[in-house]
View 1 (cartoon, rainbow, N blue to C red):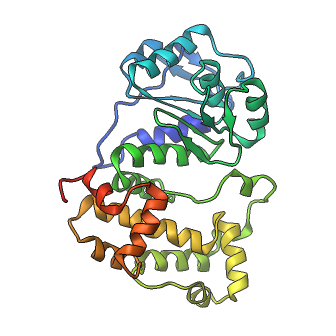
View 2: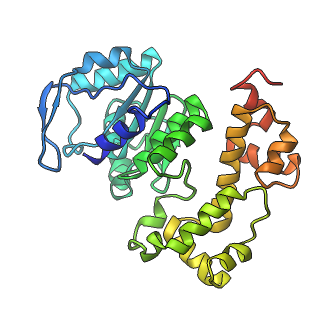
Length: 301
């Protein structure tokens, strides 16, 4: 049910943002049991996949047994037709059974990564990743990492502005650094509701044009640098440096997509000392320089 909620929340209506033609499908329309004891009544069958631009296989309790042949055929047909096919959590087992992961890298919930690798030796399973993009086949990790997968799909197909807007609407970061390994044996941090930390993060978002050294963030949180770094990592799953880098680059993407500001000004607004530094970091994340990225979303040279 969590997976259903995630995809519905991301691809459902968000105020003035463009909407999607969203539908839940099954091979047997009618009441579908869920893990919370409430059945969902689904009216769409597999024929709906024939016109879908994006198909996401969601986790199901019986994932250890391959889906019905009709499901596998529908997934394969969607991929052959050119649809983007993705999987959340153990939904990856359905794509693997359909042969869509052969020769590709993939991820799933860390708890079942070894099982996926053992059953499908032609798949390179990377248990630490939050999601893996292999072109027209994308797989994501388990549970709440479904948000990471869906926001990545939005960012990839519609740009950072759309992904950031939806992320703000659902009160989530638009991009998380780090992988599943940080969650394997880590208890839920007490600091995740730390008001002082939340205030510092909000201040940093509003002041990206500044250098923002960790010492300054720690001072504003009234902590030592060591305590701040420890509590920050416990609360966010990443380091202050990695979080700031991700935030700066996401903001740069949005400015490149939605404005005609010179790259030098974009670099200044997001806190990089020069366009050259922004270019280096941007290429590492996106694989293309800022100007090339901008051309894919606008007509601005």
